[in-house]
Image 1: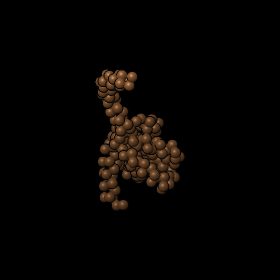
Image 2: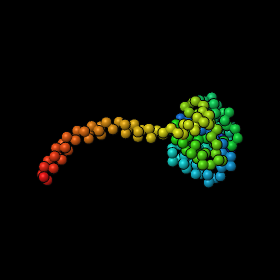
Image 3: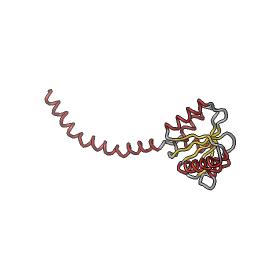
Image 4: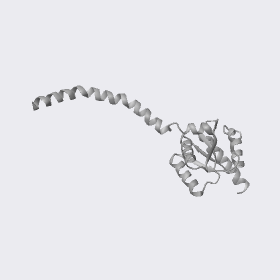
Length: 168
């Protein structure tokens, strides 16, 4: 890869990472190609990405950005997981790290705030945006549903009484 290609790659990485709300740094020593492929597939399914980068290029990409706090974590065989959903990437990486010892969470950055490994793991326990949206919709619809049931109940009682009188 020549210098101009590397410069373009750094610009692309910087743009992509700045658009993400969460960036997670992992170490993936000894991760097989099959495992890496599986992890990438799981990340894509969750709406996240997993990318192995040279640490030098990653350091240049995060320099002078809100993600600059990640620089000390970019040591050794690292890879970055990122997504616009603040929880999606953390969930997939934490779940994969629990089942595969070759992947370790080093830390991350959530909307400019640097996180340690424990914070990333606790972030993974939170519900995703889709789960929160569905819970919110359920809460909003519950009163309307109860109101509809209550409004038809008197008529249902009258119908049951008439039906019982007709049988008797």
